[in-house]
Length: 102
Image (tube, rainbow, N blue to C red; front, top):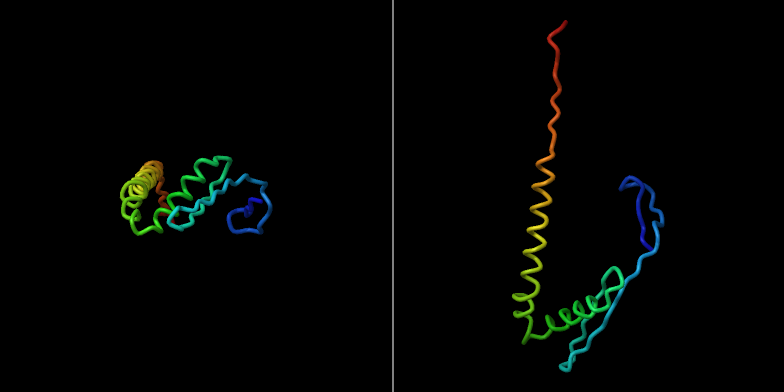
């Protein structure tokens, strides 16, 4: 059940239901990884679980960080910066004018 709030800080209410895909992976070396993703993408959940398990293995943690997590982090930061720039471009400053009457 997805919860929402009226006005962002009001009383919570049930917005509706959402599908969640989950996966669990156990490597031959014993590490267990779990992946959850909103929606019905089981393959994506499996890949997340695989990354979770591999990052626990000392042999692969640096490779997962370098080849998977760092590019994803860079992409996310780029998207956030682009969104911030687009938002800043539409910013309006309101000035209060005081009339000299009186």
